[in-house]
Image (cartoon, rainbow over all chains, first blue to last red):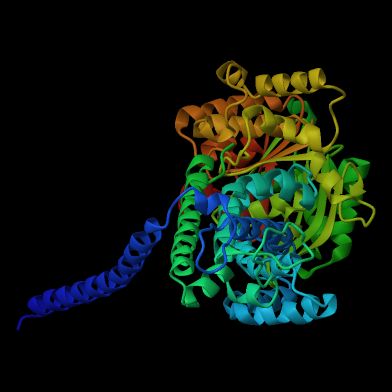
Amino acid sequence: MSRRALRKLVNALALGLSGLATAVGLFFLGAILWTLLRSGLAGMSLQLFTAMTPPPGSAGGLLNAIYGSVVMTVIGILIGGPIGVLAGTYLAEYGRNARISGVIRFVNDVLLSAPSIIVGLFVYELLVVRMGHFSAIAGAVALAIIAIPVTVRTTEDMLNLVPQGMKDASTAMGAYHWRTITSVIYPAARSGIVTGLLLAVARISGETAPLLFTALNNQFWSSNLAAPIANLPVVIFQFALSPYPNWQQLAWSGALIITMSILVLSIAARFVVSSLGPGGRS
Amino acid sequence: MNEEIPEPGRAPEEPQARRGGAAREGNGLGREEDGAPLTRQRADGGLNLKPSGRVSVPEEATQPDGATVENPVFSCRDVNVFYSGKQALKEVSLDVGRRQVLAMIGPSGCGKSTFLRCLNRMNDTIAGARVTGHIHLDGRDIHDESVDVAQLRARIGMVFQKPNPFPKSIYDNVAYGPRIHGLARSRAHLDDIVCSSLTRAGLWEEVKDRLSSPGTGLSGGQQQRLCIARTIAVQPEVILMDEPCSALDPIATARIEDLIDELRESYAIVIVTHSMQQAARVSQRTAYFHLGELIEVGNTDRVFTNPRHRLTEDYITGRFG
């Protein structure tokens, strides 16, 4: 066999294998989405968004769970977002060459891939045990801890993408570094940072394990942050395991709602990138 | 303008310059040990040296000659720069005169940009960079502990090789400096500063109807003029330009050069350039750098028509570099 034919064969083989791997991955993704859509859409109704989670056997919706999820996600990102952005700013701007930065990056990467149930247990010890009961705020803190490493990483990456020439220009104008960061670097990296925050929201809005140990669940409407609160992931978890058909149906619909909101968030993130531009044009 | 430029070798008659010269001689780093007699010798007969005998020690002492000017805005003595221990600039002593353009030429990596970045302490921002020697701005050591580096940089404008407008509107780009330094008394005053800066940079007519559109949307030459407008908006004393035209086409380059010529009436300008034609066109003094050393500096006409050092001659005649 000539060398050329061999190369063609190897090329065809590589192409075929990578194509196959892609197809397998996409098949399962498609299968999950299809099952979700088929089963979830069956339970879609207005009642889903207006009624509370019902007792077994009677009709109801997911309003309290949706509300609880939104509240905890928002508080979680409000706590975790600023911490993550500021820590990312430190890594990219102030401590770029500091030895401690390497340690922070490493720990952050560990935290990024740490099982979220451990974060749940940590907050359980930190807040739930001391407060004596589960609470929405404990759930929000757990979500914040999960959001921090994601935000740190994306913020640092995005700030590093800002051209050095632009930073130099501001420095040479006689701007202090904080001024350069707030007036030049943040605006330039705005779309990237916002995208990172949106992806962090997407990440924490589907987390179940940390909420099991912190927010627990609530059959009823509650807006008390110091009390247990209903939330979609835990409701799905409980209802899907139950023997009652109406609960199972609600779990499917809840799963569809979460998936769709994450999809919308991801699309929004892409839209933010394209509308603000890669350089963050204002 | 040219009256202000002392003839090479005559400068040491000035008290201030002599102080600098004394410091150099006192430093006594081997090659300069016989600097004083040589300087004197060159003052009366140095110009008549034939090109043939120019490679050895006497030429090394060319550095002090013409390196000083009367009443300099910048006075630099024995400046060394190390990047992570590697020496990028060796014992450079050079003055920058007021209301004139000093061009710095030399092959890539010769230290001319490094020297430029010493003047506004931009080397401070590079990890592992170390600067030694004395750099005085208006007689004050810029490395003095009492000097606020941000305030220092506000007095020294810098234009970079690649146009680097901020991701802001044209107006906000020019208003950036006045805003961070609190130079504008009112909104109307800020408008004035922006307008006059853009006018001086020759950009006003082109952008006056779209001041709120992004500065990054301008063409390369316009962006560079925007950067110049941004620089002069804070009324610096010196403008440093690091190959400001290397990313521009010939027409845009010609516009920038005209602009440099106009700005020279108010500012001291130091320009690094790879184009010898540009150095000859825009500057009154030219300094030639080679491998981190200042080889020769003097009146631009003199350097280009009658270079004293063979390295300079080789470079400007295109034999290497």
